[in-house]
Image (cartoon, rainbow, N blue to C red; front, side, top):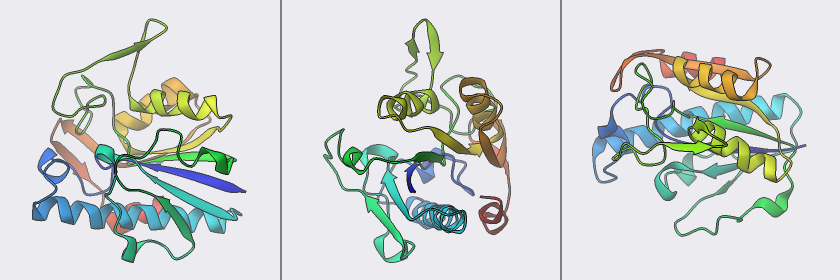
Length: 196
């Protein structure tokens, strides 16, 4: 069984401000990359323990190149880099997908770092007259390739959005609770990784 692990940065455990996710030259961004790797590796380990033969990490935040290869789980593969073709890696024929470190769509008041596509604009997207964020967008893309989304991690608002779009049977892991766009009650990353 091959799992596609799609990542974002805003919903990773310990991340709660845009200062951690935007400017790649800052110490805060570099710290967030280490937090990302911790969540990724916990998820990879869980997939392998659950019977996966292969886990492919798709680096999805801000155009890619967020992964720290030296910290990547030794059993994982990773699709990263810049200017990747949109269809890169889909020939691998995944059996299931996990959306790791996702966030609520733009405008969700208690969604930590909520946005849709650009965190620096107030963009909103609709599909079939229904407003959708990145969870729904990713699930639609996965569905095009016949890959079911089986798990979503992020804050409580993200997890509620995942259930709204993907059904109550979707596995969700809330690693923080939002109080405002850049304010959260976070779970210690080590504990969050155990939950993941």
